[in-house]
Length: 138
Image (cartoon, rainbow, N blue to C red; front, side, top):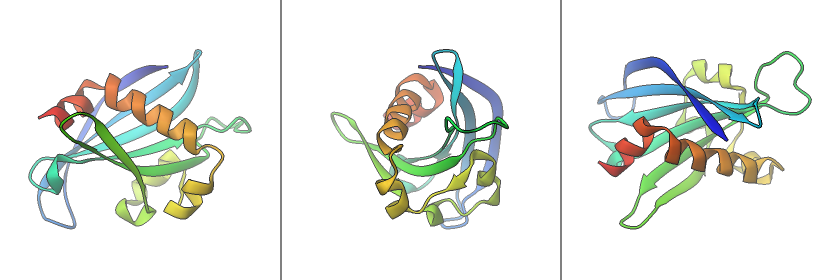
């Protein structure tokens, strides 16, 4: 897998804590084809340095180039590794997330046959996007 890191960076205000954060974007390619689009929310003041990833995976039956389904994954670091957990779609209440695909509820995402692939994509984003990795390692 290979990432294409987008130049776009949005500076936003968290509806929950009032703190500012950056939302960064990218595209994931697998064997030359687009596998997913993603955004990563990098909170600067709160939320224990966590990253909120929204990954919109392209399904094999997609013919119009838009992502099919999306998941919200919380990512945080421990002393020895990065941890990830699928979040409910309410963790990402922004309508602009719909551009990444239909955001699945947690239970629906856990039952999805694409779950393992989405975690695999998330691993690549965390390791290969320096903005995400640096935020988690700070």
